[in-house]
Length: 166
Image (tube, rainbow, N blue to C red; front, side, top):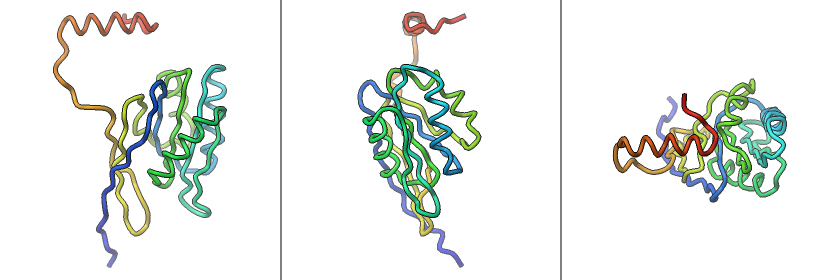
C-alpha cells in the first residue's frame, strides 16, 4: 500500500514593486519556447522572464526571456516552489491583462493559478513523488465592502488608465 501522507509548505514568492507575475501549470518542455514566442510577439515594450519546472528526465528549471532580471526572478520562484510542470512569468512595461488571453491559448498551458503584482504565497504539498500546488495566497484580506464613492473612484481610475466602462 502506498503512503498517502504529505507535508504542506508555504513558499513566499517575491514580487518586486512595479512588476507583475503570472504563475501557471503546463505539461511539456516546449512550454518555455512557446511562452517566449507568445510574449515577445505581444508587445515591443514588454520585458519578461520565464521559468518552467521540468517534471521528468533532467528535472531542471528551464528559462528564457528578454530581460535578465526578470529571468533570474522567474528562475528563483520556480526553483523555490519546485512543483513539476509549473511556470512563472515575471514582467514589466506591460500587464498580465494584456497577455493572459494569449498565454491561456498556448497549447501546453493547463492552468493559470494567478496573475498579480501583489505579495504572493504558494501553498505546496510534498509527497514521496514530488511537489504539487494546493493553492495561492494573492494579496491581503478585504477591509470592507465598496461604497458608492468607492465605486465612482474605481470607475474613474479605470478610465484614467485607459480601460473604459460601458
